[in-house]
Image (cartoon, rainbow, N blue to C red; front, side):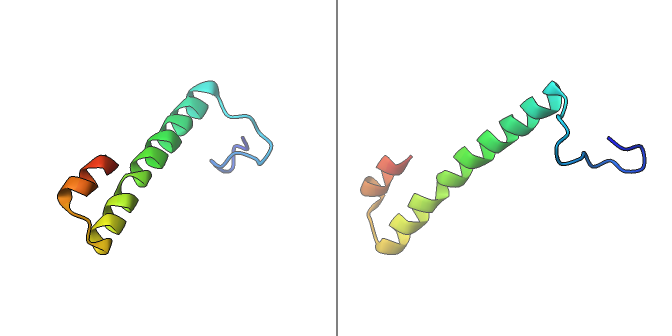
Length: 56
């Protein structure tokens, strides 16, 4: 990294700890973002709670 700024260069390798934390963050957000979409669609389509239960 340059001393003048805190952003890494495009081709710079980040430390292992930072890579692991960013990978974990990406995984958690990807999984959590996939849960509400089928539930919102099921609600708008008019599925019953019994049918919607299987989306969890």
